[in-house]
Length: 102
Image 1 (cartoon, helix red, strand yellow):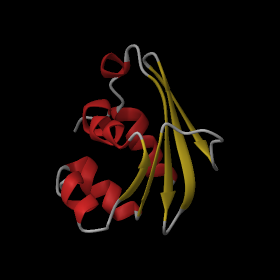
Image 2 (cartoon, rainbow, N blue to C red):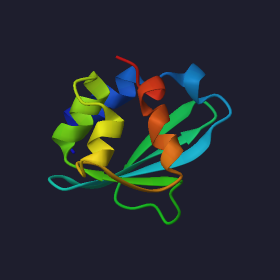
Image 3 (tube, rainbow, N blue to C red):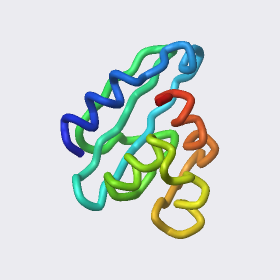
C-alpha cells in the first residue's frame, strides 16, 4: 500500500463516525503487503505489518480498495465475486465507507 493511499485514508477519516469504536481493520494486499488500522474512540493509527488479534481481516488488491473507497466498486459485489475476502467481524467492513467518506 503506497504512502499516498495511506495519506488519503488518514485525510478522509471521519472521527465522528468512529466515536465509541475500538476496532482493528487488518488489510492484506495482494500487491502491497499487510497494513492495519487501529480505530480507538475517534482516533486512527495506521501501521505496517500484521496485528495479533484484528477485529476483521480483509484481503484484496490496492485497486479494489481504491474502487470501494471511491464508490466505483460495490463492496458487497467485490466480496461476492471474490475480489475481496473477509474474515472475522465481516459486518465491520461495511462501516469503512462511513469511516472514510468521499
